[in-house]
Length: 449
Image 1 (cartoon, rainbow, N blue to C red):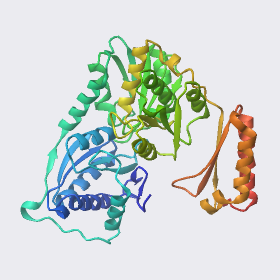
Image 2 (cartoon, one colour):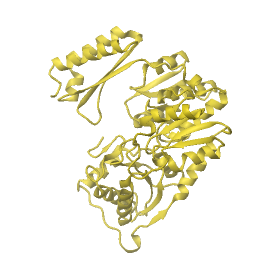
Image 3 (cartoon, one colour):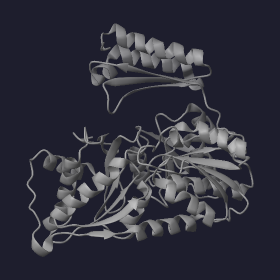
């Protein structure tokens, strides 16, 4: 991670940590980097979510891009995966998504995608940051070299067509609930499900710039749970602000997490001989219950650091086909380069219809283990993590748990915090072992007041 950009873009409170000036600078650099620096005119596509500040950042980015000689293609309000898709299939030099994902409306972010629709490489990100810090000079475009903006809503429509083409089945007479989080999916998701024949019931589809993710969407799944039960729906799907993640609710109102989704579709692929390498890619924070279910099904798994970026890197490196996070970032590398909430919901519909089983039955083999996670603020994350006594305490817990649970101790990527997590048969066992490790961290003087 760089000075400004984390694992999922440059993110912060609008005009406080992330300002319109930053957006102009990012546009200025990218317009030159992909254009004049190479003796050509750059072609860059931009999408945004429904936050009030997204419009400001869109215009600022366009200003910077045009001032450096690039043409900015504007997809308007659309999803992160749609920008990734269009960047790749329409041969753009790079893509930009303006969104802070599941964060509240007053936050925003600028996500950069390379020409393949993948998250931007670290080397290019570092060059962007050098420009922001004044270490690189970029010339102004002049006269006929100044760039222009192009309305590119056609790109969003092409993406919608792509999603519709993904379905192998008609959804006729299937009652589907959608919580679009007053976010980027509000103009897309219902149209896709309607086109496939579903009886679609939508909630939180009136964005006003200030209500994105507010008590709705995948971070407040309880509202969709109630909605599905009250309406007697067959299934429900909830997205976050930029629709790169999806959580599901079964017909009984139970939550189907990203871990359940990876199991359901991973098993479906295995049964059809489509699960390359017989592996599902997870992060360290997937529940122990998922691993037990995968083992019982004869499916292997990889574990990566937390972040869909790391999941995707592992999948590309080793040729795996499905991976993701418990939060609902699910990646299908045959179809997309990022997590795609709407695509994920279509894939779950495919399994339901192919097997003719309700979602509750498909998800039943994944039985979540109780989990206790505590955050410990420390003076130095590396010192605490690498302390021999802390390591020994963690190893003792691993030995005592055996194959009946697990412990994960990891550093926060954004705060001076160590996260201690235990999964086991009961909450009491989890609590006991988490506290044992934290006690050692405290006794060694690592905890900050």
